Length: 252
Ligand SMILES: NC(=O)c1ccc[n+]([C@@H]2O[C@H](COP(=O)([O-])OP(=O)(O)OC[C@H]3O[C@@H](n4cnc5c(N)ncnc54)[C@H](O)[C@@H]3O)[C@@H](O)[C@H]2O)c1
Image 1: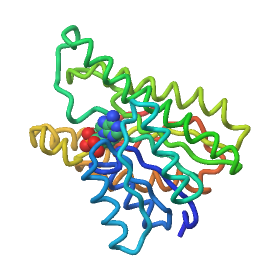
Image 2: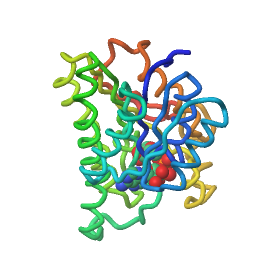
Image 3: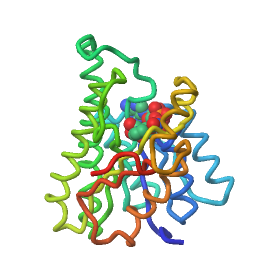
C-alpha cells in the first residue's frame, strides 16, 4: 500500500468528489480525515472507512474560518500525531446559482473567494508547520480545467477563484520546496459528482462527454488515481504543476 503510515486531510471530504478521495486514500493505507462543513456527511465518511477496516476521523470544518481550520488540524494531530497530505478540495461550486457576469451579488463573490481561495491558503498555512517538522508533505489543490477554457456558464467568480488556486499553487511551491513540501493542483473537467448530477441537465453532461478525446462522462473515480499519485512518493520531484484530468479536452 503506497500510503501506509501517512495521514491525509481531505477538505470537502464528506460528499461528492472529496468522498471518493477519502475512499481512495484509505484504500492505499492512509489514515484519513474527512473534513467538511456538513457534519452528517463527515460522520458517514468515517463510518464507511472504518466498516472497511480503515482508519478515519470525521471533522466538521468551515474552511473560510481560521479558528475552525486550526481546530481541524489540532484534532488531526491529537488523533493521528502527524499530517502528510492535505487535499484542498472544499469549494463552492455545484451549489452556486448561475448569474450573468455583471449581476453577481457582491456577497456571493466574496463568499466564493473566501471558501475557494482563502480556504486553500488558510488550510495550507495551518498544516505547513507540522509538515516542516516532519521533513515534508504534499499539498494538493483542486483547481479546475474550466480556468483553461472559460466561457459562458454564469460562473465568472468561480473561474476567477480557480485561477487564483493555480497562482497560489505556483507561488506556494516556491516557498515550501526547501522544506520538502510539494504543492500541486489538479484540474478536473466537468465531473458527474452527486450535486452536479442533481443540478445539471443530463443532456448538458452528455454533450460535454463528446468534447474530450475520451468520449464518456467523467466520474469522481477518474480523479482518484491522480490524487494518489500526487500524495505518494511516486511524484517526489513534481511540484507547482497542474495535472488536467478531463479526458483530453483542454491542453496547456
Ligand atoms: N464536479 C465538477 O464538475 C468539478 C469540476 C472541476 C473542479 N471541481 C472541483 O472539485 C471539488 C469538488 O467538487 P464537487 O463536484 O464534489 O463539489 P460539491 O459541491 O459536491 O462538494 C464540495 C464539498 O465541499 C464542502 N464544503 C463547501 N463549503 C465548505 C466550507 N466552507 N468548509 C468546508 N467544506 C465545505 C461541501 O459540503 C461538499 O462536501 C471542488 O473544489 C470543485 O470546485 C469540480
